[in-house]
Length: 282
Image (cartoon, rainbow, N blue to C red; front, side, top):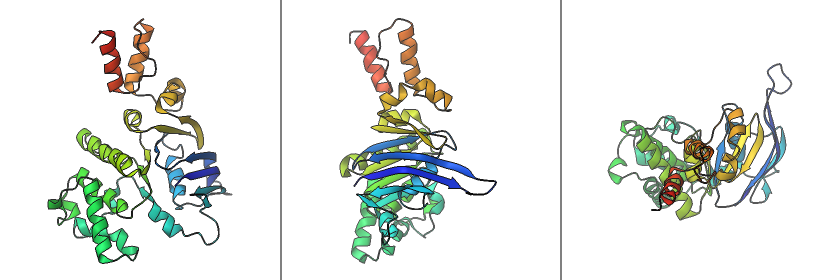
């Protein structure tokens, strides 16, 4: 199920002294099953953009198509869209409220009017998808660690059986281990279920490692759109936007400047390791 954005513009407080153009003529298409990274400095329009993708915000102008249909056309069910396009906000654990983990994950499917059997099945599948062991299912979500709470919150969205999963900084505030575990589970969802993933992150290393495509936002406009290697070739332009490339990319460029023939498009530690081993003849 593709998402197509055509000439999307959004203006906060239009017609007032506080008017602010958050999105400015943004267009792109995300085909089914793609893993897209969305990056940009604070205030670049990322969060505003993703809230348009499941109809939470209506654009000032422009159109969004989901599976070929205009989501703002008369009679279109935005409620159904939001069950297909799941959005996980930053610090989603702040939205946990039920007495136990299992009940919290059941909340979304229950509102869809499903049978008890289907609700239970969806909740179980979602919790297993994010690596939550059964021993935690009867516990209060407020007794869990930060990383476990994050998993429960993501499971609550997954229990809606979305075709597209949008995550806004899903690893914010987590330690390195928790961050890697969450991102590996998201990658597994993408690979095993063919789910379309749209990931917002400030970590260029994570983007290089997980995403197959990057969309870069700058002052409400789409600045770059391509593979991580294509985008990070423009690291100097990214720096001017308040962004950067992965640290290993800078190391590769430094090595080349010193006459060491490594590839200039290295973006991950694994690629750097392999390149150095090749140079050493190993």
